[in-house]
Image (cartoon, rainbow, N blue to C red; front, top):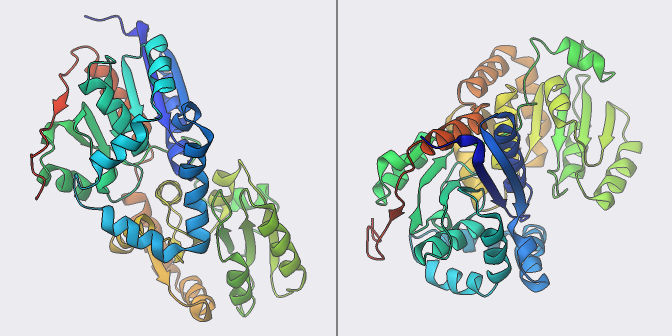
Length: 393
């Protein structure tokens, strides 16, 4: 039996958006809490690439979200065909792998976990070429498993829902290597028994509903239009706007809020207190990123989906609507009406809250860590998919 205290763990994400990084950090916490683990390194894989490549992955995505969302949706759908682009992407990625190979060779991890497809496909290639010796697990951070997550060589997949597991099975991934774990989130997302104390602790009136508007960690959101719509709401509410890492948006929101008078409005930039704000909130308005939605569900927080990013967020939106966790608002002119309806029908809101808890997976990180450490007692052989296997499934 292997001494698990010697196990070295490597967690790789990328800073293309923030969800992949937050999932990696949640896994890091879970690994560090386990006394059987010797060392854990959690790092952005883009750190090992050149500036042009880093900018391509991190900055280009944000620019497309802001300026060309329709193109982003087209690209997402076009590339969502199993194995269609893996050779081209791998050829591009391999041009930037030497620093990563050198780092892995020095660290010699036994367990490697990837929360983004970029490092996953690189590690998969390196294992296939016997350039590194480690076990690769891939953690999908959305409710739909896009084709870019597919790797030829791996040890385990961890997915957000049962549907994703079925999808991978039908693409030829061995059933026993796919785990429906949910998306890993920080354990601080744990709800209080009622909304009263969380509201009081943040200085809110416990008798009035709190509406949480999130622009996401990167601050890409139509928050101004949301505020304008909520200004027409007749019932008294308290509004919190989280602007993320976007000081320009924060300044615009503060200017907008100063001209509005119907409701109490509180504004945050980037904050580490999102769990506290979700705990106090009665309703969440924002985009359905995989991590954000998973955090909201863990808090039992009903959602109103606004302007999902074409592509993965549209798939996330479909999942949340199907599970009764959220409703969607397609026009800002009807947002106040939808908020009013939910707040005036507490039984509907309560059912959405129950649905959120039912479909939440707050212990996903711990489930993943438990399985991977158990694997180390009897390490599985890697799965090696041949180039022609199930490509047209």
